[in-house]
Amino acid sequence: MSLPEHAAVYNNFDPAALEADILDGSLENGLNVCHEICDKWAADPKRVALYYEKDGGDGVLTFAELKEQSARFANYLASQGIGKGDRVAALLPRGPELLMVIAGTLRAGAVYQPLFTAFGSGAIEYRLERAGTKLVVTDPTNYPKLNDVKNCAPALCIDAKSIDAEKNGADIPDFRSTLEAQEPSFEPVMIKGDDPFLQMFTSGTVGKSKGVAVPARALMGFYVYMKYAIDLRDDDVFWNVADPAGRMVFIMQWLAHS
View (cartoon, one colour):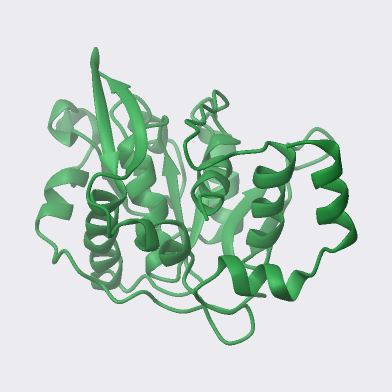
């Protein structure tokens, strides 16, 4: 984008007009973040939400597939009594399952909580306790960390069969098989602009890490940043290499497609 265009956007910026332009819902009357960042792109069955590499091969996750998997995960959350305002954490590397957890949590009106995969058990325990987290989704590499977390929330694990259940002290529910058992549709739960959808924690460089609940109205700032600072366009492929920040950037990327 050229500088004159930036100046024109700055001089004529209207938050109300921006909201009406990019959101199907309303910050005042209600919206669902999963709908805004996933569902409205899912009508085209070939539209790609994520390119990824896993187990030495390339993969693609479409918005249509993500919509279905998010509904399955939201149905599982509802079956566990997890809903609007509840915190759901992912201790996962960047991949399709991470997006399914994010989108399904948001579809249910719950609050997504990222956990850095480099965290040890102590850092995980502190954040889960402070957030009152209701569920953790992880993988075989990170699951053993949960064994040392006091009063740990229930967990789902990708490829749970690869973990020695006897050594870890329990039969471990498998993420994929759990989702396959759920219905592929779920009506999005509406939240408002001041309701949280993302539970972050500060870096903790000074004192203990502090919880920061990010409200849905922050979507407006995400959109403006990705569109006018990053200059993300419809035909771009955006690659984020950071682990903890990547969870937020996925949301920013999807929203900016509008």
